[in-house]
Length: 176
Length: 249
Image (cartoon, rainbow over all chains, first blue to last red; front, side, top):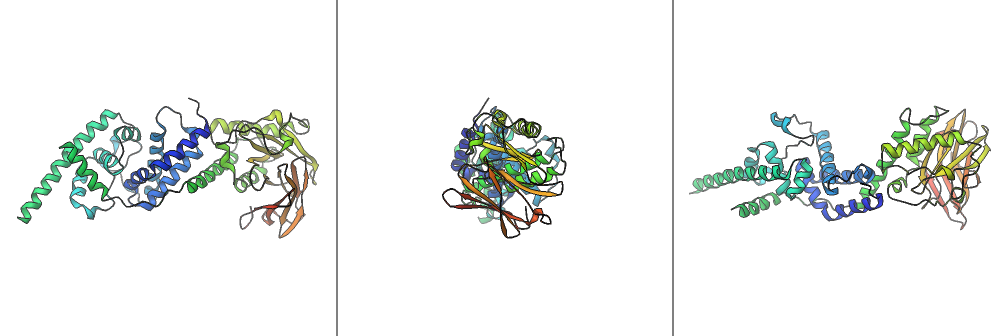
């Protein structure tokens, strides 16, 4: 599909203006701090503008941008922290990443519940609730089917509900 | 249950979110320009991308791209074919003098468009190529140029050259070629430019300016790193400068 470069650049800039906070949240989930995340978003959008001809038009422009920013965030994180791959990394796409809460000390229950999830479930939970992405956006950025996103999210939420409820009950028993 | 779980998770995650630094679209555009220039330089550095009669000129061409790329991002976003250099807006003329070198650069530009679509200066319009200056300097050089479909101009001496836009400040493109024992500063000037001077070691030297092309050969003993800048004086008397990075281009 032929796309005029000027139109494409305008669309990329419009998405940046409208969705900058959401892209920052996604990048923060990867990098762990907002400054590096901001750098990833800036660098990702710059790359998209400079290489807009790479966009083939066979998916949404926003999905393409999500993937570019995610890759940039991963690059920045790898540069700082060469983390070893976990055992379940093989199931992941090239955009593999294992998100961490930026401030686990603020919500240790949630942190523990998230850590108990398989990496794929944890990543999709982050994309949904931390980055505030829709199921369709998650499917695009993760390069998986929307149905898989829904199913994975349902499983993850059930597991989180169990753990967070258990934590709440345990907390009440301690304080009784 | 599901809705309340959604709400609860959203609230707990939002407690993790710090306010990010403010959006800065100007910074994104600056970075994009830088990436375009680096990409351009990388393409020119790769062996085989261009068939150069003077191998030594390749690096110089890449340096020139880096230094002259302030407006290079416009390659990706403009769709003009007229340039502010009238010598390049008519039918081709003077091609007999340098067809091989100009076409060699045109082939490199075409390949650039194919391999990195959207990032290059556009399609070369060789039917509007022009010999801007001929038999200049001690090596009897010829400066030739052609416009592109995105309104950029590509120019060369001995196939060492680059592409850039002329609109906006300072109204000149530039490149520096060191080969055959001489260093030449050359480029294309917009119609509104009346005079081009090259700052070498702190002194301004008059460049030959004719037919939208300009050329200056450094005196013996002066080197590439002695070039500190280029000053374009416009017909309205205003001057605009291209400043070389500290340490030379």
